[in-house]
Image (cartoon, rainbow, N blue to C red):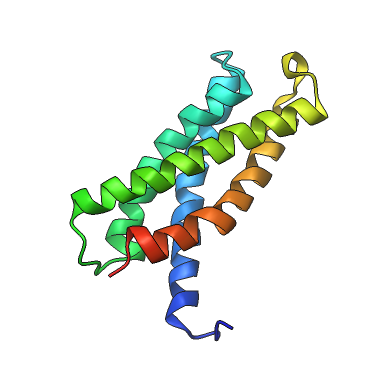
Length: 139
């Protein structure tokens, strides 16, 4: 069990804060590409996740998991593996959810973004934090 003052809880809070900032940019890019550029839910999610992932990697390296003995290159290589899984889980999760709940050609922006946020939260908590803490940035 995590104690309220534990280092893991503190890191988890920092990781979630960094993720919120990166996610805001990710979602902005995603919504803009879907709404104004006519991208499909899958491709707008992929592009937004790429932009958000770059920002998240930098924030986690410099702030959340600061003090890692890994080089930037070592972190970047491991991060790309985790990030690749994250992007695929987000993009395919959104694609599946949209297919189950709507006709792809008529999905509304509010429904799409709601599904995108729910999937992103699940992926962040179940995939990203643990792999980043225990493998990407591990000291």
